[in-house]
Amino acid sequence: MEQTTSCVLFLAFVLLVFASSGVADPLTYNVLNYGAKSDGDFDSTRAFVAAWTLACGSIKPATVYVPPGRFLLRGVVFRGQCKNNAIVFRIDGTLVAPSDYKVVGSTGNWILFEHVSGVSVYGGLLDGQGTGLWTCKRSGKGCPGGATSLGFSNSKNIVIRGLTSLNSQLYHIVIDGCNNVNVDGVSVSASGNSPNTDGIHVQSSTGVTILNSRIGTGDDCVSVGPGTNNLWIENVACGPGHGISIGSLGKEAEEPGVQNVTVKTVTFTGTQNGVRIKSWGRPSSGFARNILFQHAIMTDVENPIVIDQHYCPDEKNCPGLVSGVKISDVTYQDIRGTSATEVAVKFDCSASYPCRDIRMEDVKLTYRNKPAEASCTNADGTASGLIQPSSCL
Ligand SMILES: *[C@@H]1O[C@H](CO)[C@@H](O)[C@H](O)[C@H]1NC(C)=O
Image (cartoon, rainbow, N blue to C red):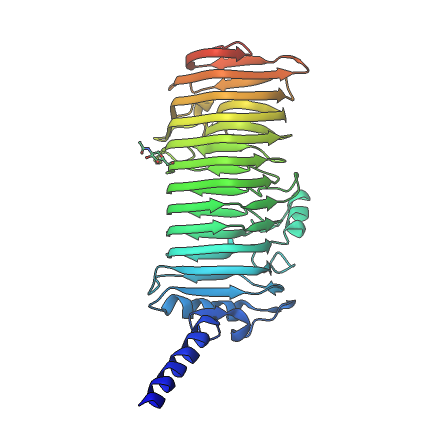
């Protein structure tokens, strides 16, 4: 009798040790076990897809694990729908794009998650190897458009935390058609003259937050496209780059608007723009409203505060350069620092739909140690507190 009891206890003990050691955890799929190699040379795409397929097919929460090392991936799509909605992608290593940009340069995406729900990407370095394509684009002809390094499309309940993205061919991170996305502690780095390498692009999405991130790149640090609602950006350092931009909006005649965007506690260093709203100068149903820019520090920024509704790079189908995009309810609160040009505040709005309810509160921008200038066209609103340059609203 006594022997049976101690035997059962011993067995329980063994099971406990086994379970807590992690060795027995069947729900962590290490890509090495599915054929991946960490030499940066071997194409690990199939191994990653195999690990993903198992995690996605699991009825319990599961983890795809990428250990230290360099893993070459050709273009890869991680597709839902999955059988569980708690998949962790834990990356201790580096994912490397093919050095020949033609391999993924025409597909639009390098690493894409599509129709997934409840996916968290923790850590990882993405090396987009974009320099070859940038050189091609700078010299002109016959280059593919390029691939976004990391995309989430038509997905929900997504976390991207502690990720580093380096030298993307095209955008670094794109969030499109998503709901509830939390980006935190991300670092983006590409040369200040790399073409179209936006840091984080958001469109057609609701409830996206971008926190505690550092973005230096050749295009917008964050760009916000049509159909974005309830976007929150806080504690982001931008530079080099083109700033944080709502737009371009109004490219299409029928287009959803952008509303309820908060951008707070951000710094811009040596950027082309600070906080910008930009629309095409052509007819559109688009709009931007309920926007707050709060607590921004500008250092040597060419256009610290700008609304530009006359965008039309090809100068085609832009009758009179008049934008249909309706901009209203935009607040600038506590924006300080230095402008690299004389005009630090520029509101260049639509003749058909003047900007309404622009509010400025405590704005102090200088140019060469003197107050900078402000310029307003078709802009209506109010100013309060300390305003320098003096308001033209
Ligand atoms: C605006 O967006 C924030 C998140 O960024 C959200 O918490 C808030 O409820 C939204 N406000 C409205 C009126 O939808």
